[in-house]
Image 1 (spheres, rainbow, N blue to C red):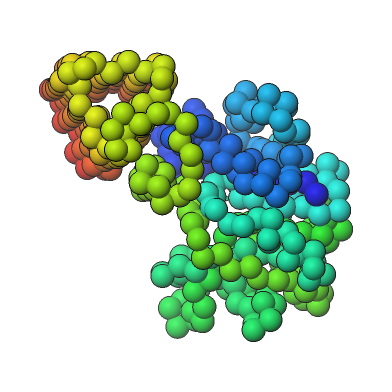
Image 2: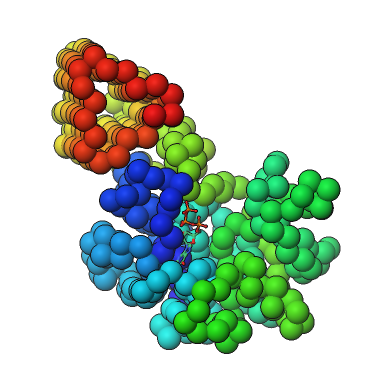
Length: 355
Ligand code: GTP
């Protein structure tokens, strides 16, 4: 059994964060995003993984290499032009064996993968699709199934009157690899809209596994912030390695926090950060690494990537800052702001919501 992680999308909805860093390797709290998926796969005994990449593949490779440093065997299947989700899995086929676990590279979940795989094997199905119930399913691909968990129909972004189920495709599949013969090689193809409906048409058994735990896709700025809030609050089970300096105020041992600074948990201060006297790292703040807060600066409900700096009395609230963003003295960065790498915010300026 091996895995394909679909990591070739451009991540347009997360721009400008994804202009210099592909979505699969954006930092999420204390690690690159795909590390969470690699950990989940390892829980099911999967250590051989194909990263299916198309957009900035070298930047993904730079983060994970061949996987040997973390006890994995990682192979890169690179598309010259993106082939879509189905074409990408087909492109990885030469590297696969009998059974394949496919993951969308932007999904964070605590699904019981060993059980999904065991149930799949026991059922004799060609494919198992993990489904997730959502309160407002209209914007997603819906999957209907019957009382014996047999998938009966796929519905893409249905009109309100067509909605008959609340379970959406969660972007996690277990497949009998032989079925990939249905996908034509070298052309763009959608696994959701092409491959799975073709399996149903052929009369194959496609099973549904409904997951009722944690699931989110990190594809928008709002969701990316939400993931951090969930990790800090413990809604997603993840052991944060950094020690706590107060209730859920995690500070890496290689960070320097002045005695006169204030930490208001939940928050995370990563390695190499420097927090000066009078600065406040407020609830929901994540400083991934090497972030410097001058005296009186304050951050809350925000994620700041490596090398960001805040001048004296600067304020950042509800914002996302890519690497090396410099916020000047007394400047304010407001809710919903999303700043690309190297952005400079002059002293005393104010960035309003959504900038
Ligand atoms: P947006 O541009 O913001 O929609 O994001 P995206 O490009 O990641 O697209 P989407 O969220 O629909 O993709 C779901 C998952 O499939 C992501 O993990 C993508 O990286 C991956 N993906 C989408 N298209 C391709 C493709 O053509 N090739 C490969 N290898 N992966 C893809």
